[in-house]
Length: 160
Image 1 (cartoon, one colour):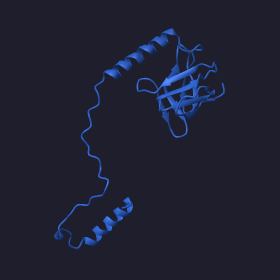
Image 2 (cartoon, one colour):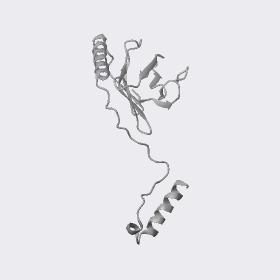
Image 3 (cartoon, helix red, strand yellow):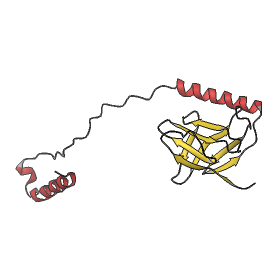
Image 4 (cartoon, one colour):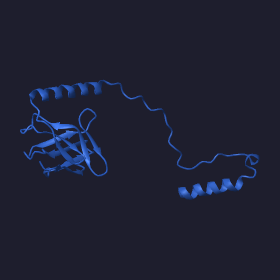
């Protein structure tokens, strides 16, 4: 079997008409969509979520995990998208689908039942204008020129 590639496109919204061998990724809608890799023409929608599918973009190619397969696909295809390549897996029977569904439902419950992340501490925003500490003349005796140069450099850097 020849190697099959899956190109990718980051889009704002999934287009109405999908091209074969193209994985559309909408970060705005936190989902991906493509035509089934077997060529049957079925649209495969994969929501991006910690308990659903994860997308990895390495700067050149995309991988999706876990594997892609659904009993609702007429072809019952089962494959991985790994670094822009389609890797075929065994077709899933009804028992396989049921085990996967049970696992997914357990993962959903566990994820939704976990305690919320602790609230962030009250963090003050950084000042918009650079404030250098003030000192008495005795403290900066002999250091006035380096401090002046540092302050001048910061003012130039900040465009002040």
